[in-house]
Amino acid sequence: MVEEGGLRENRLYVVIALVIVIAVVIAVVFSSREIKAAYVPDGFLNNGWSENLNERESSSGLFGLEKWCSLTYRIGGAYPANFTVATFKPLIMMDENDLIAKAQETIQDASQQGIVVDNNTETSGWRILNNGHKTSYITYDGNDTSKTPYEEVMVIAEIWNCGNSGTSIICIGVAQITDYAHNVTSVNTSSWEKIVSDRGGVLGFVGADGLIYNVVCH
Image (cartoon, rainbow, N blue to C red):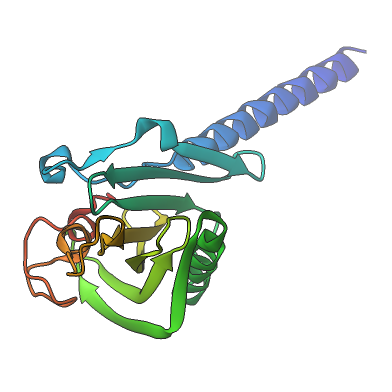
C-alpha cells in the first residue's frame, strides 16, 4: 500500500511538472508574438503632417499567434495625402511576392473609396531605406473619383520583411497632385514628394525626410 501511495504521489508530481512546463512554453510563445507597430518618428511629421489616431487599427488571429496593426498619417489642404504603415506578425514571415500581391489588392480595393489607379502606369523597383532594409515598391497614377471634378493622384505601395522584429511591413501612400476644383491647371507634387523622397532620389525626389524612407520597424 505504501508503494502504491508513493507511485500515485510521483505521478502527481509528474503531472504538475508537465503543467508547469506547458504553462511556461505557452507564456514564452505568446510573449514572442507581441507586435511592435512600425511608425514614422514625430520629427519627420512636419508642414501639416500628423497621425490620425482615430484610424489606428489592430487585430489578431489563430488564438493571438498572428497579429497586425496599422497607423495612418494625413495632411489636408489643397493637395491632401494619406500614408498608412501596416505591420504584420504571422507565424511564418510572409514571402515578399505575397506582400506585393496583398499591397496590390489593397490598392485595387481603394476604388471603393474613389481612388482608381491606371494599371498601365504601374512602375516597380527597389531601394534601401534609412532603417537599412531593402524594399520593393510599385507606383501608379490615378484619380480620386470621389471628388467633382476628379482630381489626379499618385499612389505607392512599398513592402519589406524585418527580421529583427519578425514582422512584415506594407506602406501605402496616396497623394493628390491637382486642384481642378479651384481651376488650378498646374500639378503640385509636394505631398507626394514628402511620402516618397529619399537620399538617393530613387523615385525622383531627393530628401532625407521622406515618410517611407524613415519608417522605424525595429
